[in-house]
Image 1 (cartoon, rainbow, N blue to C red):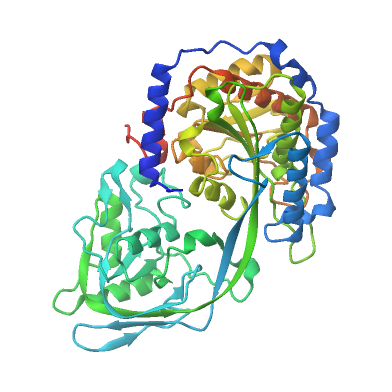
Image 2 (cartoon, rainbow, N blue to C red):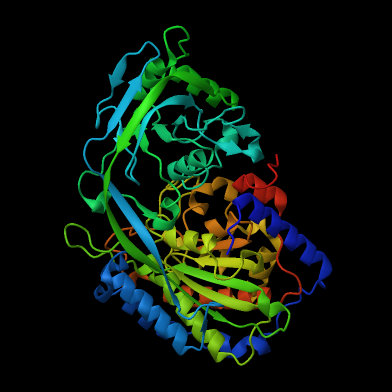
Length: 556
């Protein structure tokens, strides 16, 4: 299957949504409760409690990606899907979709040399001046000309391109990590355009023979040491496209590199001045250097598997059944720490995984089925970088243009309780004020989905909150709806909020608000029915989508 670029995919999906919305009749009347009542009434907190306690028990040892218990979790979810009559994804024969994951640790010290224009050779010291990037592969290059490419970004939505006018063919790209500090760039997250792997892949695609990533001032050169427990994980298929050496370098060493590679006849401005100018103006400052760079990196690697579990309920309408509504929740958590403590992950995210299983029960129990097909997906490897959902989007078993909406259920079992600004601009929350609340993020991007949510809530009776996405962007990027939204698919993130047990061994089943969780599942059940029966697919608001993702019109 051909995988399109993100820009091509989102633009086509936006166009598809708008065209379909114009051509199909506008049928937005509410689904009758009589039609859906059997499934709705089957959602009961007693069974929810039993299933969640099982998933959040010590038997699963925290469901860490790469553990035997993660594979066991996937097998359990698949067995429930099959028992409820779900089918594997179209053109699939198995509910479990495995994908490779790679971790890498530097092997040896590596090599970094600068061949100056005057013929002298300067070696930088591994561990102090540079470290091999944390993803591999083994690679080396003989001396190649260096080019400074600012932040290494291409952002048409902001009219910003560090590569404009630059020939990168067989050259070493030297770039700053992160993004400019100009306010227009605040919407860019570390897992999207500014992701160092994404930057390196882009440079390689433009012909670069190597990449140097210069850290921000004050940022330390972190080494995971010799323990894979502290190494970052990456999708193996994503790294397959990267065969050039990449190193990370602290700011002071990067400043020295730029000075040494420039040549005495044409010394550049200091790296600090270049950074400040880009940050202040939001305009690129790229140029070629006279010196050449030689690099060599080597790694030892650990490879293991992640597991997505995907099943679907075929739609009942002969036309609409080829379109899909996705219900998602990640099943992995943090496993066992070095002291032997089990991170049971009751709220994060046995709550969402239990919701998937209970909803599969509800749709099985109801005699009638929605017109559109429903795809239920339990994502793997969310805690280590949304790897499962990103793999799905990169190699979708259902074409993305046939996906009309996505609902992500992540931490939907507790009452929010935290200080202000815990993540982004979140206000302070008190437990007593959130015993019936549910946060719905992403609603401003698709007003039709918000209409469905609010209408369905007349039955569910929750206190719905719609936080401003522009003020909660860091939170918006932290769950598995985000890869779908970045591809132009309307996606809502359902989340009851942070609490003192977040990512701690004390996130246990006895603290779940099961009566609220029952009502959340009823809400989701009804909303999926609404989307599944609607005469037109939910469109995105292009201006809001563009402002939040930088994939569409930039907006104001």
